[in-house]
Amino acid sequence: MTATAFTIFVMPHNITTSKRNVLGGYIIGMVFGLLFFIIHPSSGVGQDAIYALAVACSMFTMTIMYLEHPPTAGTALGVVVAGFSIRVIISIIVGRY
Image (tube, rainbow, N blue to C red; front, side):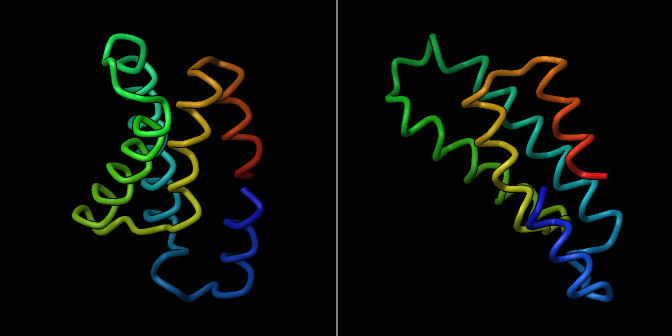
C-alpha cells in the first residue's frame, strides 16, 4: 500500500498509476491470492512454490490485461499467506485509500 501511495504521488501521470491500473491490479492480486489460498492445502506442492505461483500469475495477468501496477503483485502474496477473510479485504481497501 505504501508503495502505491509513493508511486501515485511521485509519478502521477504514469500509466501504472492510473485508477484503472491500481484498482485492476489490486483486484487481480486478491483473486489470485484467493485462488492459490484455496488450492494450496490439496495441491501437494511446496508452500514456497505456491507463493511464487500466486505472484507470477498475478503479474502475468496484469501484463496481458494492460493493468500493470507493480506494487499490487505483493497483494497476491499477502492474501495467500494471510488467508482470505473479510479482515484481509478491509486491510487492503483501507491501506489503499
